[in-house]
Length: 405
Ligand SMILES: *Cc1c(COP(=O)(O)O)cnc(C)c1O
Image (tube, rainbow, N blue to C red; front, side, top):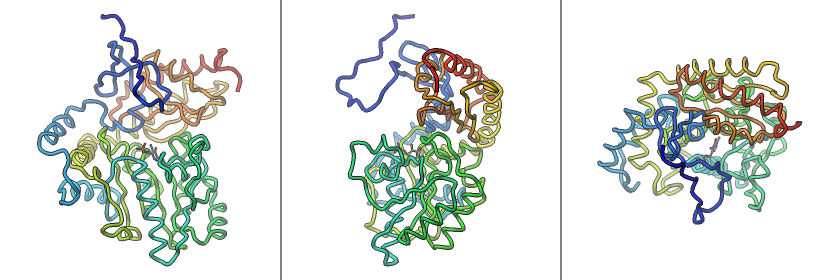
């Protein structure tokens, strides 16, 4: 092998990330290689983005064909692939229309604009949105204001107003807030909180929110940017509760790596936006639309939701078994291939240790190890993740760096 290449110094890249000293070169399936030729098992999937893994043998030629045909045109014209992807998303969700953008925060911005306009359309000129503790909705000024994390707010005030925040899974708090704030026009939450530490909204809570939103004639907006697109074993995580949202922002996994966002709306919200109210230059471009169409098609052909449910259950069981009775492990939770291991102390140091052991993971909410791999993960790869990760967590909890909680 050649001499190892040092991770590059990057004097010209704005320093917005605390990066590991690893530079990645390429990937195949659930594996990635660094510039030194070292291989890692990818338990992160580009943070729930690479639905089909890396270099999928049917996605790659479809995108190559699309790049050669047309990547971008303007929304001055009809883009036939938009209707194709929108129709598929509506078929899968039971909703009516989709707007396309380029990222999760953009999808959430559109949702927040819909919530405000929904109010204005009915004579409420001070619309408010109910949001939740632990929430993450993005890093634009409006979506960071909807986000609960004070670290994400710090330095960026004044925050956007019009948000009321209550605890997750507390329907009494929701009802009290609606009483105290009659101008609330939307309830906005992640069906399963991702950055907040893999915290599910309970099924009964989601069902109660649906009833409350109907009773008040306001919008239920479910941010499925991370938990949607088959990751939990259903197309959308709220389908486990047998409900439908009025507004559903999507992004991450929808393009399997090509940047894309979407807001899918049901009847109460479908006609809120009128020509001229919203738009984006790149949103709905043919390349991203093709990536979305092909991702959903391959998911159906290969039954990847069933795979996510099955292999996710195996991985969760292996982690629960490997970490049973380990002091310092609070809980292994999550559904399908969206799993979190909560520890009783900050564990950011595990990122580098896992990479050293050949595994990509993430740590979120300071003390939750998160696994959001590609939905093509095999049983054998799931077993390998558990076999690498469990001993690392045990060693971390018992050594000096892990320290005391
Ligand atoms: C990642 C994420 C976002 C933000 O998406 P970006 O594409 O990074 O802007 C919003 N909501 C949720 C639930 C997310 O996980």
